[in-house]
Amino acid sequence: MYSEKVMDHFTNPRNVGEIENADAVGQVGNVKCGDIMKMYLKIENDTIVDVKFKTFGCGSAIATSSMATEMIKGKTVKEALNLSNRAVAEALDGLPPVKMHCSVLAEQAVKSAIYNYAQKNDLYFEELEGFNPDEDHDHHDHGHEDEEH
Image (cartoon, rainbow, N blue to C red; front, top):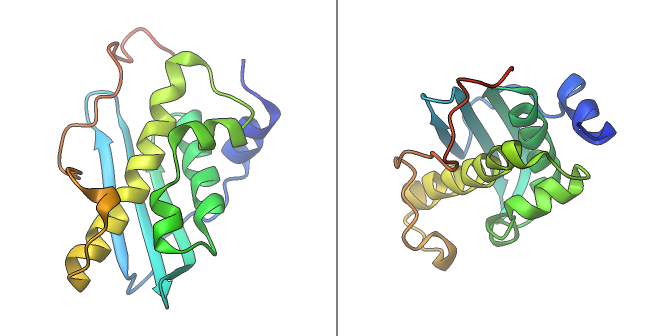
């Protein structure tokens, strides 16, 4: 079952939409399982002053995207890079095991946007060492074929 916080962020997601002229845009997803997240960041003086997302996916994908945006807004880029999927799941009072990959995707979406920002501005972040925004983000061994969305 889903926690009240998951249901709240699914039914009333925060920060939905896109930012025109965003300083950073990141997209991650897996076409096979259907969850795709796109994140937009507005960054001023190394601080994330605004963040929006568009997610195509199940309720958990939407809820984790929403929570992740809430958790990084107002934070420095470095603080946002340290956001973990575990922290997102805990902030939502937990996710069912089969949905933990959604919190991983949310973490990856944040990293992907910051990766884009780093590329555009010729910046280096140790936390992005080895990060590849284009890899296939299949973070679970099972598909969604037998799962209701």
